[in-house]
Structures are given as structure tokens and as C-alpha cells.
Image 1 (cartoon, rainbow, N blue to C red):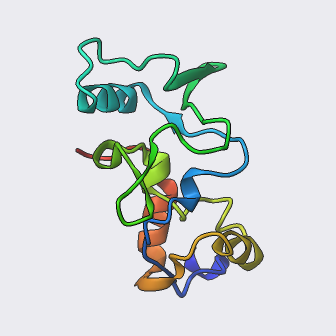
Image 2: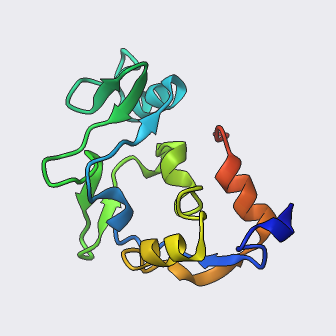
Length: 143
């Protein structure tokens, strides 16, 4: 129910392309088998799978590899000085739903702390409660 959520009035976000969400402390960028296939096809790999320098197995799941500095393996410098995703059209769902993750939406404090490193948060168009919940709960993306 919307009245139970602190963000019921909506939140603003517009990606600035800074790449800050693609780097930082060690973590995971979870990818499904279908997302792995989509990325592999985008990279024109005949085997429709990703090599160990790009993909790692974590228990029964898969995650994209991070570089030693915390950058996602697909985060690349751009001509304009920003950093961008080299697989943006097929980026995983986890990346597509940023910053509307449950952990960021847990409280106004959690949102504000995350926004300290994301210049797109609290700027740009307003996402209403329904749009936020659709992104937060999304399980897959359509091509």
C-alpha cells in the first residue's frame, strides 16, 4: 500500500552518465542465464556464454567481474570525460533498475546516503509511486 512507503509522493532521478553506480566497494552485479546470453550475443560470441574474465560463478548464481579498483568490467571511459557502460543496450536488470532498489528505498536516510554519490538522484523527472514499485519489483526486462 502506497501510504506505508516513505516515497509515496514519488522521487526524482535522471541518469547523468557519471558511472558512479558501476564502481565502488566490492559487490555483485547479478546476471541471469538469459542476460548472459544477451550480453554474449551483443559481444558477438558464438558460444552465447561469457569467459571467466567477464563472468564469475557465486554459489548457484552468476555475477559480472569487477576490476581491482571496483569498476564493473564493462565500465569504460568516454570521450566526454564521463564513464559509460560498453554493453548499455543489454545491461542487466540490476543496472536497469538503479537507483530504485529496495536497499536504497528502505528509508529517506538510505536514499540520501546513496544520493551523495549519485548526482542523478533527486534531480530530473519525478517517478511516481507506481513507477518506482514497478522498477523495484521487476524480475526481467523485455528486449
